[in-house]
Length: 379
Image (cartoon, rainbow, N blue to C red; front, side):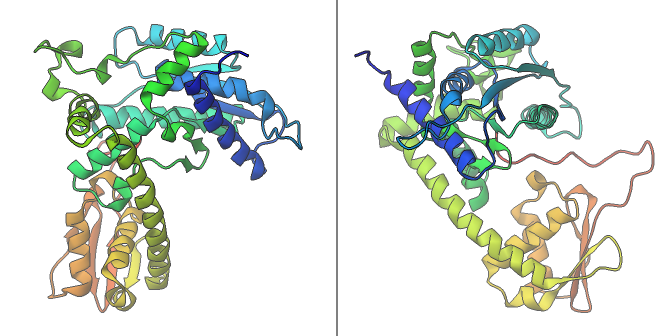
């Protein structure tokens, strides 16, 4: 009997569970299309391989033969590195070689200039916009993303370094809308082993590597200037594993799962509070009754206030604890203070027992626009 590669078995089991969940919720039916976001790296090619193997047997059990779905791939060329078009073409060819069809390549423009969220954030925004467009155009039921347990642990560490709250420390959700992350329980080493098992070469993004022995990195970028996630991956995680043991990554990912459940519950309660405090506005502004907010627990009130700020156009990544503190002070430490200035040119003020949150004024043609919103903490 042929030996089954353990990494490939784990990858297939993870994809099988995700497709099974889609089928049980009646979102996935015979012949439907599922897309894999494929960069050509080990994680996404391993996901593509596992999805291709599991596509003919969705829901298969001793009682049911299951059914077949179609699995395709989307390759996004960000155009940010020399030779990116060739990398995208190679990734597409490898996806086709694994049996995926259709395989679609989408080139995007990444606006990383002044007013953007930086190269990483701008690339992420462009990537998800492209994935959304392709999924709609192709009629895909879901898009599978290849993020691993290592990616999740790195997200938690980045959130800790930024002093973020529970929602950011919860890392990347396993499921959000059409997006699914089957590999959040697998390590990066396992995805590389899957590629070896199926005989497919993978590309290593040079921006994921720190320079060695003082040599500058990609395009002359020194290690200190490498993306934050790269520095965490190459320098921080190994030190933690040396000092605390090899279970650090798993523990960080488990912490994210626990915090996400807590954050989901608190966010639901905060949404109820915000709804109860909202007064029908006379214009585009949001008007809140201070009474219900002042009586609520601080954890719920602060979440509700942050949600209100986002509702009037404050960029999520720029709306910090300092801004929420200022809004909270209008509710519980009212001393007649003036207008609170919020990200995205929004404003908040208190008058007659009500909190008024007003979006930015429309910008005249040709005027400078506020910075673009920072996308959620995802890759």
